[in-house]
Each structure stands twice: as C-alpha cells, then as structure tokens.
Image (cartoon, rainbow, N blue to C red):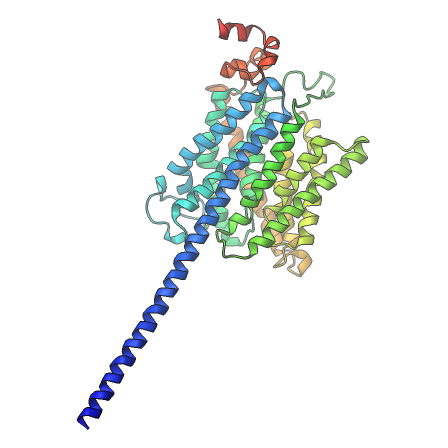
Length: 449
C-alpha cells in the first residue's frame, strides 16, 4: 500500500505539473495574441496618420493650381506652416482641450500630452492616437488657406492658424469625439464632415468676408470676372492625392486594423467620391455646355467630404446617393457664394462648409441604424441638425472676431501693391516660376539689388 500510495502521489504531481504547463501556455498564448493585436492596431493608426498627413500635399497642390502663378509659393508656405505651427500648438494645448478629462464643453487636463488618458479607453499608445488627431487638426486649419488665397498677409494668417488649431477646432472635437455634450446626445460624425470640414468651411467663410475680394474680381456694376488658376494639372494631382489620403482619413478612424469594417468604410468612401465627381461633371455639362474640369475636381472632393460623417454607418447605395448629392450641391453653392461677392478662389466654403454640413445631415436619413429611411424616425436627423447648427454658431462668429482682431492689430490683408505684384515675391522674396520673373517688376529688383 505504501508503494501504491507513493505511485499515486507521483502521478498526481505529474498531472498537476502538466496542467500548470498547459495553463501557463494558454495564458502566454493569450498574452501574445493581445500584444500582437495592439501592435497591429498601432501600426494601422500610424499608417492612416501618415496618409492623412500626405493630404497636406494634396491641399497645397489644389490651392496652388486653382490660383495664379505669382502666389504659388505663398500657398505652399501657408500649408506647411499650418502643419508645423499646428502640430506644436496641438501638442501643447489643443489635444488637452479636445481629449483631456473635463466637462461637456472642453477638456482641462493632459496639456503637452502628459497625464492619464485612461478615460479614452484606448488600446494603442497615446502618442499614436495623438499623431492621428494632430493631422486631423492640421486639415481643419489648412482648408481656410484656399478661401483666403492671393490677398492675405502671411503674419496674420499664422496667427489665425495657431488659434484655430489650439482652440476653435479642439472645442468642437471635444463635443463630438472627446465625450462632450454632442457625443452624449448621440450625434454621429464618424471621421469629421462637421468636426473637421465644416469647422474649416465656416472659418473660411469668415476669413473671406473680412478680407474682401481680390482686386479686379468684381466690377462696380456687380458683374464678376473669372480669375482662372494657373495649373489645372497641379490641381488634378492634388485631388488624386486627397482622394488617396482619404483612405487613411475614414477607415483609419476605426483606430483598429482588427475591425474588419475598414473594408466597408473604404468602399463607401470611394463610391461617394466617384459619385460626386460624376454628378458634378454631368451637371456642369448641362449648365455650361461642356464638362467643367474644376467643378468635376471639386465634385470629387465634395463627395469625400459628404461621406466622411457616415462612412461607417451607411450602405454602399447610401454612399453613392450622398456623394452624388454633394457633387450636385457643390456647383450651386460655389455659384451662390460668388454671387454675393464672397471671393473664394478654390471653392473651399462650398466643398467643406456646405457639403460637410450636408453630409452630416444625410446621416440622419441614410444611416442603417436609426436613419429616417430605415425606420428610425426623425430623432437622429434632429440630433444631426442640432450638431451642424451648434458647430456653425460656434465657429463662424468666433472666426469672424478672430479675423477682425487680426486685421486691427498685425494686419490681415496684403497691400494693393503686394497683391498685384504677387505674394511670392512681396511676402517671401522668391518666385515659384523663375521664367516669369520679368512680370514681377520692381519688388523683384529691390529684392535682388
């Protein structure tokens, strides 16, 4: 019995050892899977951030192409400083206002991306999340550049860029994505039709109003003069870059490569852009007798802006309808804005402000969960309308005051001489196209002497 008891005890110990090994192996496997998931999601968010960053190049090309050659370098300078100055101010205060713990209106903790952000429930490093949000903030800022092109004092523009990235945009972002009051009401803006694009659009409207039109744009009798951009090929390249970058903008907003809805989001994004371009082409063809290139380019962007709010919530058919509506509306919006003598050289107000608001509203119609056409009634549509209105009422008056203040202090508008000569030479002492130098006159001679 003694030997039998010993053998039994030995077998029990062996069995316990095996169970412990298997158990520890299972725990280790689970830990490995979790680590791999976090790594995969982190790489996905970073890749998406890099795509959205590349959109800055797209904006620069669109704006430079749609404006005159003598201002191309100034456009590029504004775009690069939107991102450079914007990154610093968003790191210092903007991210804290947007995602820091606080109240329903604004965050109040986490300046310089320090402290705990556990309330966000992220499974990726905070710095991956920060860089993804920083490129979004820079996008909101750079939208305004096009509407204020060809007549803006560079110093005044820098002050605007800092303020919108550090305060105006982050507050709206907190309302919607930082756990603020709109988020609590159920407002849906998946990747920023309103948070990013309408904020930029309403600020662009304020800037264009305060600046006034370019010299020679409107006649005393109210008639309008066309001021064609210098390079449609450059503008077209910019649109393709933006379209490409949007595959980071929308699918990347899942913050997870393991969320397989990224495939559907990519599809809705692409179809909306395609529908926007197609409808703009057809409408311009009917209106003007020929398919207009610039309107078609802006139609693609309008479709992209329009779908950004509901990219994760609508069907493929819904995406086509939203993009097509945005591509149609943008043509009439561009004309209406021009008719009231608000000079927007690139159509930024119509593309981002009007179509951003439209796309956000249409979530209340086409969302498969709660949309009007899917039996959800008017509840979601009402919340969407409230969000669109609140963001407009926050952004436009504040931007108007900001631009008025800049105009009264450091100055917002270039002088008439600087505008006629071109901002490349008068603001930066250089030219984008050296072969055109003889056209620049005395400013170039002064700079060179």
